[in-house]
Image (cartoon, rainbow, N blue to C red; front, side, top):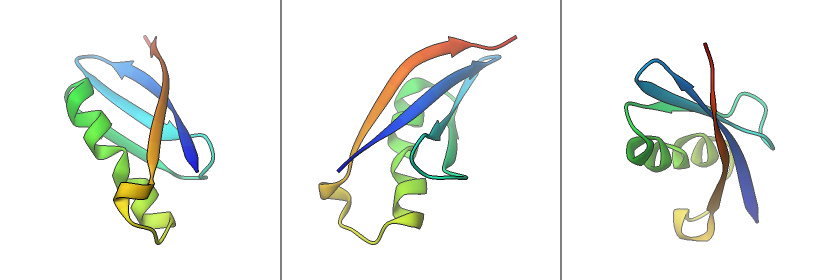
Length: 64
């Protein structure tokens, strides 16, 4: 199953929310860290091997 994230840029850092999971938020100082952290909300909600979970991100949206 694929899960989609909406990515927001806020100042110099980024945050994202998983569109399929209510409350599935994460953040990172840069996009690489954010993409790595996207596994965290999925692992909290879904009991599955991280190798079986695929994260798909939408475009970055500037805020502010």
